[in-house]
Image (cartoon, rainbow over all chains, first blue to last red):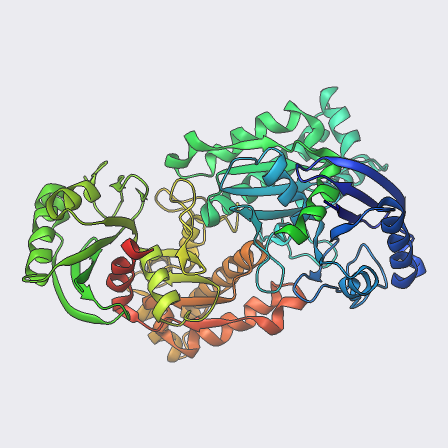
Amino acid sequence: MGVHIGIDLGGTNVRVASVTENGEVEEIMQEATEAEQGSRYTIEKMIRMVESISEGKEIEGIGIGAPGPLDPTRGVILDPPNLPGWDEVPIVKHFADHFDVPVQLNNDANAAALAEARFGSGEGYESVFYITVSTGVGGGLVLNGKVLNGVQGYAGEIGNMILNPHGYQYSNLNKGALESYSSGTAMAERFHEHFGSYGGAEDVFSLVSQGDEKAQRIVDEAIEYLAMGIANITHIVNPDVFVLGGGVMNAGELIWVPLRDRLEDYLYPGLVPHINLKPAALSGEAGVIGAALLPQQ
Amino acid sequence: MGVHIGIDLGGTNVRVASVTENGEVEEIMQEATEAEQGSRYTIEKMIRMVESISEGKEIEGIGIGAPGPLDPTRGVILDPPNLPGWDEVPIVKHFADHFDVPVQLNNDANAAALAEARFGSGEGYESVFYITVSTGVGGGLVLNGKVLNGVQGYAGEIGNMILNPHGYQYSNLNKGALESYSSGTAMAERFHEHFGSYGGAEDVFSLVSQGDEKAQRIVDEAIEYLAMGIANITHIVNPDVFVLGGGVMNAGELIWVPLRDRLEDYLYPGLVPHINLKPAALSGEAGVIGAALLPQQ
C-alpha cells in the first residue's frame, strides 16, 4: 500500500503531508510559498517536497488544495488574488507528468470541507456544509462524501454572497457580500475605522471581553451577517450539519452563542429545532488531509 | 406496465394525471381543491380522481406535489399558508393505505424541478436549479436526476433568502427576502403603493410596455433582486443551468434581457461567459409530471 499525498498551497506557506486511509497525518513538511518567484519555481519546490516525503514509497495519488479561482476539471489555477502572477497555471499536468499518478486539484475550502465531512465534525452526516471564517470567508458542500464543485468550480464561493445591496464593498467582491462583513479582514477594516489604529479580529475580540462597546458592535455586525449567510444556505440546500472553522471561529462563546441566537431569527420556525452548527475538528490539518482525499473521490 | 400517477395539489385546484415513462401526460383531470372543507374531504376527492384516471389499470406509484412546508421523509403536510387548516396531515399514509403502492410527497417546486430536469429545459444537464417566479418564489435543485430535499425538506426554499436586511417584509418571510421583491405578490403590492389601485404583475408589465416609468421601476427592482438571488445560488452551488418558470417569467424580453444583464454584474468574471438561464419548457404540466416521477427516484 503506497502513500496518499496531500498538498495545501497557500499564499504564504505550502504544506505537504502523507495521510493514511483513516485521515491521519503520517508526515508533514512546510516551506514558504514564495509565490512572487513565479509558479514554476514554487511547483519545483513542491515536487521536491513530495519526493522527500514519499522517499522509498510508492505514491497512490496526489491532491492539491489551492486558493481559488481555479478549474478543478482541467486542473488549472486561474488567477487567484493570493498567488499574484499565477495566471492559467496547469499545476495538475506538472505533477502528473512528473509522478505519473492520479493528481487532483480543488480549492482549499473544498479540500477542508471534504476532510471535515469524512474525518472531522461532519463524519456520519449525508450532507455537510463547511464554512471557514478567516482572512476571507469560504465554504464547501459535501454530499454523500463527495465535494460539490459546481459546473465551473465556483460552488462554495459563499464569501461573495450578496446580503446587502447598499453595503460595504471590498476588492472584487459584490457590494454587501458576506466576506465584507464577517471575515477577519472586514473586522480589521472596521477596527481601523473605529479606533484609528491597526488590529485584527483577535484584537476586536480581546476588546469585547474587556467590555468595549465599539468592538462589540463590530462583532455583532460580523455575527449578524454570518447568521444571514447561514440562513440563506439553509434555505437553498438545507444541509444536515454546518461545520465552522477558521481563525475567527476560535473566539469561543463570544461568537458561537450569539451566532446560534441570531440564526434562529432568520429560519422558518420548522427549522429552528434542527439547527446543527459544529466547530471544525481538524483545525490546521484539514487542508492537507482533504487534499489527500481528492484523488480517492 | 401500469400507470404512474402524478398529483399537483394547489391552493386553488388539484390536478391528477397519468404520465408515461417518457414524461408525457396521457390523461389529466382537474377539480377545485376546496381546502377549507378540511384535509379529509379533499383527500377523499383526490383518491376518487386517482381511481377514475387509473380505472382498469394497475398503478405503479403515486407522487404528490404540494405547497410547503412539508416533510417528504415522513410524507406529512405541515401547515402550508396555501392550505389553511391543514396541520400535520399524513397524506402519504392515506394514499398508501388505500392503494397499497409506493407513494411519495414533495413540495410543488421540487416536483416541477424534477420534471424540468428530466424532460424539460434541464434535460441532459448534471445539475439543474429550477426557479418559479409566480405568486411566490420557490425553487429546487436536481443533481444527477435526483431532487435535493435537504435534511428537513427545506432545500430550495429560496423565496426566504435574505437580500436586504433593511428591506420589505411580508407574512412569515425574512425581512428583505427575495420573494418580497420579485414575486407576483410583491409586484402587486408595489403596484398598489404606486398607483393606489389594485393590479397584478401582468398589469405592471402592460404599463411598462406603454412606457410608464413608475411601472418600470417596479420591474427593475423585481429583476434586480432576482438577479442577486441567482448570483447567490451560483456562488453556493454553481449549477449547470438555471431553468426559470412561473407566470412572471412569461413577460418575455421585458424580464429576460435585463435579468441576464443585471446578473453579469453580480458574478465573478470567470462565471459570466457560462451563465445559462433557460425558460421552463413544460409550463403548467411540470407539476403533475414531476409528481409522477417522485416514486421512481
